[in-house]
Image (cartoon, rainbow over all chains, first blue to last red; front, side, top):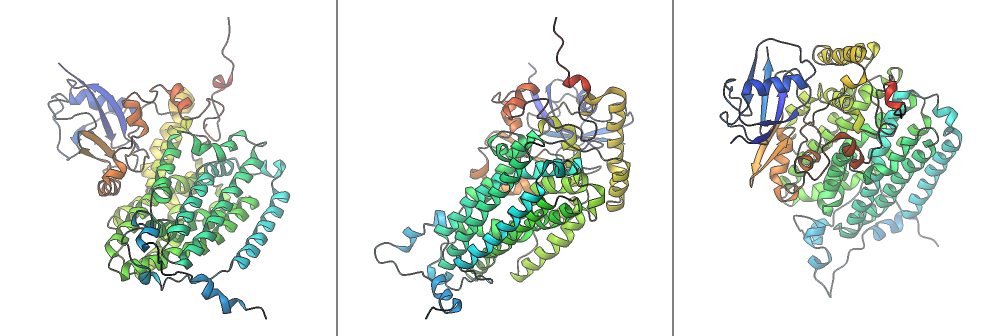
Length: 80
Length: 493
Protein backbone atom coordinates (compact mmCIF):
# COMPACT_ATOMS: atom_id res chain seq x y z
CA UNK A 1 0.00 0.00 0.00
CA UNK A 2 1.72 3.22 -1.11
CA UNK A 3 1.84 6.01 1.41
CA UNK A 4 1.97 9.74 0.85
CA UNK A 5 5.27 11.37 1.71
CA UNK A 6 6.46 14.97 1.84
CA UNK A 7 9.89 15.78 0.50
CA UNK A 8 12.07 18.86 0.05
CA UNK A 9 13.30 19.24 -3.52
CA UNK A 10 16.15 21.47 -4.65
CA UNK A 11 16.80 22.19 -8.31
CA UNK A 12 20.18 23.47 -9.44
CA UNK A 13 18.79 26.38 -11.48
CA UNK A 14 16.29 27.46 -8.84
CA UNK A 15 16.91 29.64 -5.81
CA UNK A 16 14.73 28.02 -3.18
CA UNK A 17 13.89 24.54 -2.00
CA UNK A 18 10.36 23.35 -2.63
CA UNK A 19 8.01 21.27 -0.53
CA UNK A 20 6.33 18.40 -2.39
CA UNK A 21 3.70 15.91 -1.32
CA UNK A 22 3.65 12.76 -3.40
CA UNK A 23 2.78 9.03 -3.28
CA UNK A 24 5.76 6.90 -2.33
CA UNK A 25 5.20 4.60 -5.33
CA UNK A 26 5.85 7.48 -7.71
CA UNK A 27 9.04 7.09 -9.74
CA UNK A 28 12.07 9.26 -9.15
CA UNK A 29 11.70 10.52 -12.70
CA UNK A 30 8.14 11.66 -12.05
CA UNK A 31 9.24 13.29 -8.81
CA UNK A 32 11.95 15.25 -10.62
CA UNK A 33 9.45 16.34 -13.27
CA UNK A 34 7.08 17.47 -10.56
CA UNK A 35 9.82 19.60 -9.01
CA UNK A 36 10.87 21.05 -12.36
CA UNK A 37 7.29 21.97 -13.22
CA UNK A 38 7.09 24.08 -10.05
CA UNK A 39 10.41 25.82 -10.70
CA UNK A 40 11.14 28.96 -12.68
CA UNK A 41 12.26 27.18 -15.78
CA UNK A 42 9.80 24.35 -16.44
CA UNK A 43 10.25 24.45 -20.19
CA UNK A 44 14.02 23.93 -20.06
CA UNK A 45 14.80 20.43 -21.21
CA UNK A 46 18.06 18.57 -21.27
CA UNK A 47 19.73 15.99 -19.12
CA UNK A 48 19.51 15.98 -15.37
CA UNK A 49 20.38 13.73 -12.47
CA UNK A 50 18.68 13.17 -9.14
CA UNK A 51 20.66 12.69 -5.93
CA UNK A 52 19.76 12.20 -2.30
CA UNK A 53 21.22 14.21 0.58
CA UNK A 54 24.29 11.96 0.75
CA UNK A 55 25.00 12.73 -2.91
CA UNK A 56 24.11 9.25 -4.18
CA UNK A 57 22.65 9.29 -7.68
CA UNK A 58 19.14 7.83 -7.70
CA UNK A 59 17.93 5.59 -10.50
CA UNK A 60 15.13 7.50 -12.19
CA UNK A 61 13.15 4.32 -12.91
CA UNK A 62 12.72 3.21 -9.32
CA UNK A 63 10.09 4.47 -6.92
CA UNK A 64 10.54 6.99 -4.14
CA UNK A 65 10.11 4.21 -1.58
CA UNK A 66 12.65 1.99 -3.34
CA UNK A 67 15.11 4.89 -3.36
CA UNK A 68 14.77 5.08 0.41
CA UNK A 69 13.27 8.57 0.48
CA UNK A 70 10.95 9.16 3.43
CA UNK A 71 8.95 12.12 4.66
CA UNK A 72 11.20 15.05 5.56
CA UNK A 73 14.06 13.92 3.29
CA UNK A 74 15.58 16.18 0.73
CA UNK A 75 16.71 15.48 -2.81
CA UNK A 76 18.53 17.43 -5.50
CA UNK A 77 17.91 17.70 -9.22
CA UNK A 78 21.00 18.89 -11.09
CA UNK A 79 20.53 20.02 -14.65
CA UNK A 80 23.19 19.81 -17.29
CA UNK B 1 32.32 71.24 49.29
CA UNK B 2 30.74 69.05 46.61
CA UNK B 3 32.80 66.10 45.48
CA UNK B 4 34.06 66.16 41.93
CA UNK B 5 32.89 63.42 39.56
CA UNK B 6 36.13 61.46 39.67
CA UNK B 7 36.21 61.60 43.46
CA UNK B 8 33.09 59.51 43.88
CA UNK B 9 32.38 57.68 40.61
CA UNK B 10 34.62 54.69 41.23
CA UNK B 11 33.18 54.22 44.71
CA UNK B 12 29.63 54.45 43.40
CA UNK B 13 30.31 52.03 40.56
CA UNK B 14 31.70 49.37 42.84
CA UNK B 15 29.21 48.66 45.60
CA UNK B 16 29.43 44.89 45.78
CA UNK B 17 29.39 43.60 49.32
CA UNK B 18 29.69 40.35 51.26
CA UNK B 19 26.36 38.69 52.04
CA UNK B 20 25.80 37.58 55.62
CA UNK B 21 22.29 36.12 55.55
CA UNK B 22 22.24 34.40 52.19
CA UNK B 23 24.72 32.61 50.02
CA UNK B 24 26.10 34.44 47.00
CA UNK B 25 24.81 31.61 44.83
CA UNK B 26 21.28 32.33 46.03
CA UNK B 27 21.57 36.00 45.17
CA UNK B 28 23.03 35.20 41.79
CA UNK B 29 21.73 31.74 40.80
CA UNK B 30 23.67 30.17 37.96
CA UNK B 31 20.52 29.75 35.87
CA UNK B 32 20.08 33.53 35.78
CA UNK B 33 23.60 34.83 36.19
CA UNK B 34 25.28 32.39 33.86
CA UNK B 35 27.87 29.69 33.40
CA UNK B 36 30.52 29.25 34.63
CA UNK B 37 29.41 30.47 38.02
CA UNK B 38 32.31 32.41 39.51
CA UNK B 39 32.53 34.11 42.92
CA UNK B 40 32.35 37.89 43.00
CA UNK B 41 36.09 38.02 43.56
CA UNK B 42 36.57 36.79 39.99
CA UNK B 43 34.51 39.70 38.65
CA UNK B 44 36.03 42.50 40.73
CA UNK B 45 38.18 43.76 37.84
CA UNK B 46 35.13 44.21 35.60
CA UNK B 47 35.56 47.68 34.14
CA UNK B 48 33.96 49.56 31.32
CA UNK B 49 36.21 51.82 29.25
CA UNK B 50 33.88 54.81 29.04
CA UNK B 51 32.33 55.58 32.41
CA UNK B 52 29.09 57.49 32.78
CA UNK B 53 27.30 58.92 35.76
CA UNK B 54 23.54 58.95 35.92
CA UNK B 55 23.60 62.76 35.82
CA UNK B 56 25.69 62.68 32.63
CA UNK B 57 23.45 60.03 31.17
CA UNK B 58 20.28 62.06 31.70
CA UNK B 59 21.86 65.24 30.36
CA UNK B 60 23.21 63.51 27.23
CA UNK B 61 20.03 61.60 26.52
CA UNK B 62 17.89 64.68 26.97
CA UNK B 63 20.07 66.58 24.50
CA UNK B 64 19.82 63.72 22.01
CA UNK B 65 16.06 63.50 22.35
CA UNK B 66 15.71 67.27 22.02
CA UNK B 67 17.67 67.13 18.77
CA UNK B 68 15.62 64.23 17.49
CA UNK B 69 12.28 65.79 18.41
CA UNK B 70 13.35 69.03 16.74
CA UNK B 71 14.17 67.11 13.58
CA UNK B 72 10.87 65.26 13.84
CA UNK B 73 8.78 68.43 13.98
CA UNK B 74 10.60 69.75 10.93
CA UNK B 75 10.96 66.56 8.88
CA UNK B 76 7.99 64.29 9.50
CA UNK B 77 5.54 66.12 7.28
CA UNK B 78 3.71 63.98 4.74
CA UNK B 79 4.88 66.29 1.95
CA UNK B 80 8.48 65.37 2.80
CA UNK B 81 7.70 61.65 2.94
CA UNK B 82 6.02 61.87 -0.46
CA UNK B 83 9.31 62.94 -1.98
CA UNK B 84 11.15 59.86 -0.72
CA UNK B 85 12.00 57.04 -3.09
CA UNK B 86 9.27 54.32 -3.06
CA UNK B 87 11.86 51.58 -2.49
CA UNK B 88 13.26 53.46 0.45
CA UNK B 89 9.80 53.74 2.02
CA UNK B 90 9.45 49.94 1.86
CA UNK B 91 12.90 49.52 3.40
CA UNK B 92 11.88 51.74 6.32
CA UNK B 93 8.63 49.81 6.76
CA UNK B 94 10.59 46.54 6.80
CA UNK B 95 13.14 47.94 9.27
CA UNK B 96 10.52 49.41 11.63
CA UNK B 97 8.53 46.18 11.76
CA UNK B 98 11.49 44.00 12.55
CA UNK B 99 13.34 46.23 15.00
CA UNK B 100 10.91 48.38 17.00
CA UNK B 101 9.59 45.72 19.35
CA UNK B 102 12.84 43.75 19.28
CA UNK B 103 14.25 46.79 21.09
CA UNK B 104 11.66 46.30 23.80
CA UNK B 105 12.84 42.70 24.14
CA UNK B 106 16.34 44.14 24.57
CA UNK B 107 15.01 46.15 27.55
CA UNK B 108 14.27 42.83 29.27
CA UNK B 109 17.75 41.60 28.40
CA UNK B 110 19.45 44.65 29.86
CA UNK B 111 17.25 44.49 32.95
CA UNK B 112 18.24 40.87 33.46
CA UNK B 113 21.88 41.93 33.47
CA UNK B 114 21.00 44.88 35.72
CA UNK B 115 19.77 42.36 38.29
CA UNK B 116 21.93 39.28 37.70
CA UNK B 117 25.16 40.74 36.30
CA UNK B 118 27.98 39.74 38.62
CA UNK B 119 29.60 43.11 39.25
CA UNK B 120 27.91 46.33 40.29
CA UNK B 121 29.60 48.36 37.54
CA UNK B 122 28.16 45.88 35.03
CA UNK B 123 24.72 46.20 36.63
CA UNK B 124 24.92 49.99 36.50
CA UNK B 125 25.84 49.92 32.81
CA UNK B 126 23.00 47.52 32.13
CA UNK B 127 20.55 49.78 33.96
CA UNK B 128 21.49 52.58 31.60
CA UNK B 129 21.32 50.06 28.76
CA UNK B 130 17.71 49.24 29.68
CA UNK B 131 16.85 52.93 29.52
CA UNK B 132 18.59 53.10 26.14
CA UNK B 133 16.63 50.19 24.76
CA UNK B 134 13.35 51.69 25.97
CA UNK B 135 14.24 54.74 23.93
CA UNK B 136 15.12 52.57 20.93
CA UNK B 137 11.67 51.05 21.01
CA UNK B 138 9.95 54.39 21.44
CA UNK B 139 11.72 56.20 18.60
CA UNK B 140 10.66 53.86 15.77
CA UNK B 141 7.17 53.53 17.25
CA UNK B 142 6.80 57.29 17.15
CA UNK B 143 8.20 57.52 13.64
CA UNK B 144 5.98 54.67 12.49
CA UNK B 145 2.99 56.45 13.97
CA UNK B 146 3.92 59.64 12.15
CA UNK B 147 4.04 57.73 8.88
CA UNK B 148 0.56 56.21 9.22
CA UNK B 149 -1.23 59.03 7.33
CA UNK B 150 1.20 58.43 4.49
CA UNK B 151 0.99 54.62 4.44
CA UNK B 152 -1.30 52.59 6.69
CA UNK B 153 1.03 49.58 6.66
CA UNK B 154 3.36 51.44 8.99
CA UNK B 155 1.10 50.06 11.72
CA UNK B 156 3.32 46.98 11.35
CA UNK B 157 5.91 48.95 13.33
CA UNK B 158 3.90 47.99 16.37
CA UNK B 159 1.88 45.11 15.07
CA UNK B 160 4.54 42.88 13.51
CA UNK B 161 5.71 41.06 16.64
CA UNK B 162 2.12 40.31 17.62
CA UNK B 163 1.55 38.31 14.43
CA UNK B 164 2.58 34.94 13.03
CA UNK B 165 4.04 36.44 9.87
CA UNK B 166 6.85 34.05 8.86
CA UNK B 167 9.66 36.57 8.61
CA UNK B 168 8.73 38.01 11.99
CA UNK B 169 8.70 34.51 13.47
CA UNK B 170 12.30 34.17 12.26
CA UNK B 171 13.27 37.47 13.89
CA UNK B 172 11.38 36.60 17.07
CA UNK B 173 13.07 33.19 17.23
CA UNK B 174 16.49 34.84 17.19
CA UNK B 175 15.64 37.60 19.65
CA UNK B 176 13.94 35.18 22.04
CA UNK B 177 17.10 33.07 21.93
CA UNK B 178 19.47 36.01 22.29
CA UNK B 179 17.55 38.40 24.57
CA UNK B 180 14.80 36.71 26.52
CA UNK B 181 15.57 33.07 27.24
CA UNK B 182 19.11 33.40 28.46
CA UNK B 183 21.29 34.39 31.40
CA UNK B 184 23.38 37.48 32.12
CA UNK B 185 26.74 36.06 30.98
CA UNK B 186 25.40 34.72 27.70
CA UNK B 187 23.52 37.96 27.14
CA UNK B 188 26.65 40.05 27.53
CA UNK B 189 28.47 38.01 24.90
CA UNK B 190 25.59 37.49 22.51
CA UNK B 191 23.87 40.86 22.71
CA UNK B 192 26.63 43.24 23.71
CA UNK B 193 29.72 41.66 22.18
CA UNK B 194 28.43 40.04 18.98
CA UNK B 195 25.32 42.02 18.07
CA UNK B 196 26.14 45.48 19.35
CA UNK B 197 29.84 45.72 18.64
CA UNK B 198 29.37 43.78 15.42
CA UNK B 199 26.15 43.80 13.51
CA UNK B 200 24.35 46.92 14.71
CA UNK B 201 27.09 48.99 13.06
CA UNK B 202 25.70 47.99 9.71
CA UNK B 203 22.06 48.48 10.65
CA UNK B 204 22.47 51.82 12.36
CA UNK B 205 25.60 53.46 10.95
CA UNK B 206 25.81 52.22 7.38
CA UNK B 207 22.05 52.51 7.00
CA UNK B 208 22.15 56.03 8.50
CA UNK B 209 24.65 57.05 5.83
CA UNK B 210 22.33 55.68 3.17
CA UNK B 211 19.34 57.45 4.73
CA UNK B 212 21.23 60.72 4.45
CA UNK B 213 21.88 60.14 0.75
CA UNK B 214 18.25 59.06 0.26
CA UNK B 215 17.18 62.41 1.83
CA UNK B 216 15.37 60.72 4.72
CA UNK B 217 17.08 62.89 7.30
CA UNK B 218 14.80 62.10 10.21
CA UNK B 219 15.48 58.38 9.80
CA UNK B 220 19.19 59.11 9.50
CA UNK B 221 19.18 61.12 12.72
CA UNK B 222 17.16 58.48 14.56
CA UNK B 223 19.53 55.67 13.54
CA UNK B 224 22.64 57.67 14.35
CA UNK B 225 21.20 58.69 17.71
CA UNK B 226 20.38 55.07 18.56
CA UNK B 227 23.85 53.91 17.57
CA UNK B 228 25.52 56.29 20.05
CA UNK B 229 23.63 54.46 22.82
CA UNK B 230 24.54 51.06 21.43
CA UNK B 231 28.21 51.98 21.37
CA UNK B 232 28.08 52.85 25.09
CA UNK B 233 26.26 49.85 26.49
CA UNK B 234 27.84 47.53 23.90
CA UNK B 235 31.05 47.76 25.94
CA UNK B 236 29.48 45.48 28.57
CA UNK B 237 30.53 42.49 26.48
CA UNK B 238 34.30 42.96 26.52
CA UNK B 239 34.96 42.72 30.27
CA UNK B 240 32.54 39.79 30.60
CA UNK B 241 34.36 37.95 27.84
CA UNK B 242 37.71 38.77 29.44
CA UNK B 243 36.56 37.39 32.79
CA UNK B 244 35.32 34.15 31.20
CA UNK B 245 38.57 33.61 29.34
CA UNK B 246 40.70 34.41 32.40
CA UNK B 247 38.73 31.83 34.37
CA UNK B 248 39.03 28.90 32.00
CA UNK B 249 35.76 29.27 30.08
CA UNK B 250 37.21 30.10 26.69
CA UNK B 251 35.47 27.18 24.99
CA UNK B 252 32.06 28.37 26.19
CA UNK B 253 32.86 31.92 25.08
CA UNK B 254 33.93 30.69 21.64
CA UNK B 255 30.70 28.74 21.25
CA UNK B 256 28.56 31.75 22.13
CA UNK B 257 30.47 33.93 19.68
CA UNK B 258 30.23 31.35 16.88
CA UNK B 259 26.58 30.66 17.48
CA UNK B 260 25.47 34.24 17.61
CA UNK B 261 27.67 35.33 14.72
CA UNK B 262 25.94 32.81 12.49
CA UNK B 263 22.45 33.60 13.79
CA UNK B 264 23.00 37.33 13.33
CA UNK B 265 24.46 36.80 9.87
CA UNK B 266 21.35 34.87 8.82
CA UNK B 267 18.88 37.46 10.08
CA UNK B 268 20.86 40.50 8.98
CA UNK B 269 21.37 39.26 5.42
CA UNK B 270 17.60 38.86 5.29
CA UNK B 271 16.78 42.25 6.75
CA UNK B 272 19.71 44.43 5.84
CA UNK B 273 21.38 42.63 2.94
CA UNK B 274 18.36 42.49 0.71
CA UNK B 275 17.37 46.05 1.70
CA UNK B 276 20.77 47.57 0.95
CA UNK B 277 21.30 45.80 -2.35
CA UNK B 278 17.75 46.12 -3.69
CA UNK B 279 15.63 48.75 -1.91
CA UNK B 280 18.00 51.65 -1.36
CA UNK B 281 17.64 54.04 -4.34
CA UNK B 282 20.58 53.63 -6.69
CA UNK B 283 21.68 57.24 -6.16
CA UNK B 284 22.05 56.56 -2.42
CA UNK B 285 23.81 53.19 -2.58
CA UNK B 286 27.52 53.70 -2.97
CA UNK B 287 28.78 50.55 -1.37
CA UNK B 288 27.16 47.14 -1.54
CA UNK B 289 26.05 45.08 1.44
CA UNK B 290 29.07 42.86 0.93
CA UNK B 291 31.41 45.86 1.00
CA UNK B 292 29.76 47.21 4.14
CA UNK B 293 30.05 43.80 5.76
CA UNK B 294 33.72 43.57 4.86
CA UNK B 295 34.60 47.04 6.06
CA UNK B 296 32.29 47.62 9.00
CA UNK B 297 31.77 44.16 10.41
CA UNK B 298 34.39 41.65 9.37
CA UNK B 299 37.43 43.87 9.81
CA UNK B 300 36.34 45.20 13.18
CA UNK B 301 35.06 41.88 14.47
CA UNK B 302 38.22 40.05 13.46
CA UNK B 303 40.18 42.56 15.55
CA UNK B 304 37.85 41.95 18.49
CA UNK B 305 38.37 38.19 18.23
CA UNK B 306 42.15 38.61 18.07
CA UNK B 307 42.06 40.77 21.21
CA UNK B 308 40.69 37.77 23.10
CA UNK B 309 42.72 35.13 21.25
CA UNK B 310 39.46 33.67 19.98
CA UNK B 311 39.39 31.84 16.67
CA UNK B 312 37.25 32.82 13.75
CA UNK B 313 34.05 30.78 13.71
CA UNK B 314 34.59 27.36 12.14
CA UNK B 315 32.14 28.16 9.34
CA UNK B 316 34.04 31.33 8.32
CA UNK B 317 34.72 30.13 4.75
CA UNK B 318 31.03 29.42 4.14
CA UNK B 319 30.12 32.83 5.56
CA UNK B 320 32.61 34.59 3.25
CA UNK B 321 31.29 32.59 0.29
CA UNK B 322 27.70 33.48 1.16
CA UNK B 323 28.48 37.22 1.05
CA UNK B 324 28.33 36.89 -2.71
CA UNK B 325 24.96 35.25 -3.02
CA UNK B 326 22.87 34.78 0.13
CA UNK B 327 21.12 38.15 0.10
CA UNK B 328 20.45 37.79 -3.64
CA UNK B 329 18.74 34.44 -3.20
CA UNK B 330 16.84 35.92 -0.32
CA UNK B 331 15.64 38.87 -2.39
CA UNK B 332 14.26 36.42 -4.96
CA UNK B 333 12.52 34.63 -2.12
CA UNK B 334 11.05 37.87 -0.81
CA UNK B 335 9.85 38.72 -4.31
CA UNK B 336 8.32 35.32 -5.06
CA UNK B 337 6.58 35.18 -1.67
CA UNK B 338 5.82 38.91 -1.46
CA UNK B 339 2.11 38.35 -0.78
CA UNK B 340 3.15 36.96 2.61
CA UNK B 341 4.94 40.19 3.61
CA UNK B 342 3.79 43.59 4.89
CA UNK B 343 5.98 45.60 2.53
CA UNK B 344 6.50 45.77 -1.22
CA UNK B 345 9.47 44.11 -2.92
CA UNK B 346 11.59 45.35 -5.81
CA UNK B 347 12.44 43.55 -9.01
CA UNK B 348 15.77 45.17 -10.00
CA UNK B 349 15.55 47.40 -13.09
CA UNK B 350 18.20 47.63 -15.81
CA UNK B 351 20.33 50.24 -14.00
CA UNK B 352 20.17 48.33 -10.75
CA UNK B 353 21.15 45.13 -12.51
CA UNK B 354 24.21 46.85 -13.92
CA UNK B 355 25.13 48.04 -10.42
CA UNK B 356 24.64 44.55 -8.99
CA UNK B 357 26.85 43.07 -11.73
CA UNK B 358 29.58 45.57 -10.93
CA UNK B 359 29.46 44.80 -7.23
CA UNK B 360 28.96 41.06 -7.60
CA UNK B 361 30.72 39.76 -10.76
CA UNK B 362 28.74 36.49 -10.82
CA UNK B 363 25.37 38.12 -10.18
CA UNK B 364 24.23 38.33 -13.77
CA UNK B 365 25.25 34.77 -14.56
CA UNK B 366 23.45 33.29 -11.55
CA UNK B 367 20.51 35.58 -10.86
CA UNK B 368 20.03 37.44 -14.14
CA UNK B 369 18.25 34.52 -15.90
CA UNK B 370 15.82 34.08 -13.00
CA UNK B 371 14.87 37.77 -12.96
CA UNK B 372 14.62 37.61 -16.78
CA UNK B 373 12.14 34.75 -16.43
CA UNK B 374 10.09 36.67 -13.87
CA UNK B 375 10.07 39.75 -16.10
CA UNK B 376 8.99 37.71 -19.13
CA UNK B 377 6.30 35.92 -17.15
CA UNK B 378 4.83 39.17 -15.88
CA UNK B 379 4.66 40.55 -19.41
CA UNK B 380 3.18 37.39 -20.93
CA UNK B 381 0.99 35.97 -18.18
CA UNK B 382 0.59 38.72 -15.60
CA UNK B 383 1.39 39.09 -11.95
CA UNK B 384 0.14 35.68 -10.85
CA UNK B 385 2.83 33.86 -12.80
CA UNK B 386 5.58 35.63 -10.84
CA UNK B 387 4.47 34.30 -7.48
CA UNK B 388 5.62 31.08 -5.84
CA UNK B 389 2.82 28.64 -5.05
CA UNK B 390 4.80 25.93 -3.32
CA UNK B 391 5.84 26.05 0.30
CA UNK B 392 9.57 26.48 0.85
CA UNK B 393 11.22 24.28 3.47
CA UNK B 394 11.80 26.49 6.50
CA UNK B 395 14.99 25.97 8.52
CA UNK B 396 14.24 24.49 11.93
CA UNK B 397 16.84 26.77 13.50
CA UNK B 398 16.75 30.19 11.82
CA UNK B 399 13.15 29.74 10.53
CA UNK B 400 14.12 31.27 7.18
CA UNK B 401 13.43 29.53 3.86
CA UNK B 402 16.17 27.21 2.66
CA UNK B 403 17.18 29.44 -0.19
CA UNK B 404 20.90 29.79 0.30
CA UNK B 405 21.68 27.65 -2.70
CA UNK B 406 23.37 28.38 -5.98
CA UNK B 407 24.45 26.31 -8.99
CA UNK B 408 26.46 23.36 -7.83
CA UNK B 409 25.90 23.99 -4.15
CA UNK B 410 22.94 23.28 -1.94
CA UNK B 411 23.66 24.00 1.71
CA UNK B 412 20.40 22.51 3.03
CA UNK B 413 20.63 19.42 5.22
CA UNK B 414 18.45 17.32 7.54
CA UNK B 415 18.68 15.43 10.81
CA UNK B 416 16.37 12.85 12.38
CA UNK B 417 15.93 13.01 16.15
CA UNK B 418 13.54 10.81 18.11
CA UNK B 419 11.58 9.98 14.99
CA UNK B 420 11.13 13.57 13.87
CA UNK B 421 12.82 14.90 10.74
CA UNK B 422 14.30 18.37 10.89
CA UNK B 423 15.49 20.41 7.92
CA UNK B 424 18.14 23.13 8.04
CA UNK B 425 19.23 25.81 5.61
CA UNK B 426 22.89 25.10 6.34
CA UNK B 427 25.40 23.12 8.35
CA UNK B 428 25.97 25.90 10.94
CA UNK B 429 22.24 26.09 11.69
CA UNK B 430 22.18 22.30 12.18
CA UNK B 431 25.29 22.51 14.40
CA UNK B 432 23.68 25.11 16.69
CA UNK B 433 20.48 23.07 16.83
CA UNK B 434 22.37 19.90 17.78
CA UNK B 435 24.38 21.74 20.44
CA UNK B 436 21.19 22.85 22.19
CA UNK B 437 18.68 20.17 21.30
CA UNK B 438 16.47 20.59 24.32
CA UNK B 439 16.20 24.29 23.58
CA UNK B 440 15.22 24.04 19.93
CA UNK B 441 13.83 20.58 19.15
CA UNK B 442 10.31 21.24 20.41
CA UNK B 443 9.68 24.22 18.16
CA UNK B 444 7.66 23.80 14.99
CA UNK B 445 8.21 25.95 11.93
CA UNK B 446 5.29 27.38 9.96
CA UNK B 447 5.68 24.56 7.42
CA UNK B 448 5.81 21.94 10.22
CA UNK B 449 2.54 23.37 11.52
CA UNK B 450 0.94 23.25 8.09
CA UNK B 451 2.04 19.62 7.64
CA UNK B 452 0.57 18.77 11.05
CA UNK B 453 -2.70 20.51 10.18
CA UNK B 454 -2.23 23.03 13.01
CA UNK B 455 -2.08 25.96 10.59
CA UNK B 456 -4.18 26.58 7.47
CA UNK B 457 -2.72 25.11 4.31
CA UNK B 458 -4.55 27.35 1.84
CA UNK B 459 -3.17 30.78 1.12
CA UNK B 460 -6.13 33.03 2.06
CA UNK B 461 -6.51 31.40 5.47
CA UNK B 462 -2.75 31.22 5.95
CA UNK B 463 -2.48 34.96 5.31
CA UNK B 464 -5.17 35.62 7.91
CA UNK B 465 -3.29 33.38 10.35
CA UNK B 466 -0.18 35.46 9.68
CA UNK B 467 -2.10 38.67 10.41
CA UNK B 468 -2.16 39.90 6.83
CA UNK B 469 -5.29 41.24 5.14
CA UNK B 470 -5.04 40.57 1.42
CA UNK B 471 -4.67 42.28 -0.96
CA UNK B 472 -4.35 45.75 0.53
CA UNK B 473 -1.99 44.91 3.35
CA UNK B 474 0.16 42.33 1.58
CA UNK B 475 3.35 43.01 -0.34
CA UNK B 476 3.30 43.90 -4.00
CA UNK B 477 5.79 44.40 -6.79
CA UNK B 478 7.34 47.74 -5.89
CA UNK B 479 6.99 49.32 -9.29
CA UNK B 480 4.07 47.49 -10.87
CA UNK B 481 1.77 47.06 -7.91
CA UNK B 482 -1.04 44.56 -8.29
CA UNK B 483 -2.78 43.33 -11.39
CA UNK B 484 -5.80 45.60 -11.72
CA UNK B 485 -8.27 42.76 -11.34
CA UNK B 486 -7.07 42.09 -7.82
CA UNK B 487 -8.23 45.49 -6.66
CA UNK B 488 -11.56 45.53 -8.49
CA UNK B 489 -14.64 44.47 -6.54
CA UNK B 490 -15.94 41.00 -7.28
CA UNK B 491 -18.85 41.36 -9.76
CA UNK B 492 -22.27 40.60 -8.31
CA UNK B 493 -25.28 39.16 -10.09
